[in-house]
Image 1: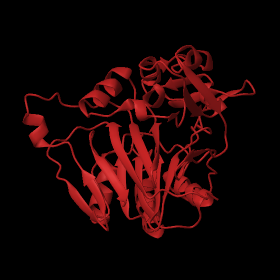
Image 2: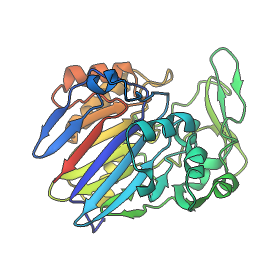
Image 3: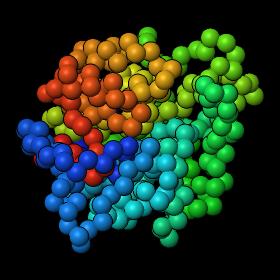
Image 4: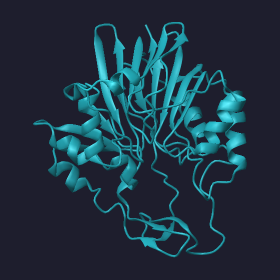
Length: 328
């Protein structure tokens, strides 16, 4: 169980599938805020607008007294968009102390080398050992994406100035920030759907023992921030391990506290994901009494529609440039 807590946490959406300049700022109550990059900035000719892509990257700064800890959770699909958005959003990237890669898919690790190349210092890069195992994608039309994560290697991380931290355990990154480490898959409907026949369309992996089979993304990890007197903020990359499983794992680490927010990919937009899983996820979020729900990236339009209709007071639409603040 985590010992230290943050007085406050600030989360900036650096990379996301959507840019929406029409979203309003929101007062979330009890000192919490949601601030957008909006229409005024979009129309200001002195400024360059941020960009969206099919990926995710979240900048997390937790503060405890006069101290702070800053972590970059995932790095998007391309360094081009990540570095562009760091610049146009005015982020001081020199404050970033640690990078966490949720899992070994390109839309989560793709910007890591561009980011590491921007600094004349070493930066820890945490992920699980299985993130580097070879992966393949079989499409419904018969095409195959051949070994699509081959650019992600321990050697290349080191060559670009990163220091790999390979673990399946939960890391304490300071000021109440923790990685989840391995996420147990206890929620029955969450997890990969077995193909009906060998080599059916889907994601596959060469496993550590040399066998080839369904890519279960066993290495995926999330991030949790324990905010003093308020509760937990839970971040997911794609939630291949299940967004509800990730919330439950966060409570294992930090204790059975209220969940202030869950944001990130919910893994409900994939063609092979059963449609019933959306409603089951809504029910699971309600059962866990999650206060703010921000589906992103791979969550799918049906997921946004369901939360907007069924939990409108708790749903927040994401966009690049959104800044969420929890705590004083």
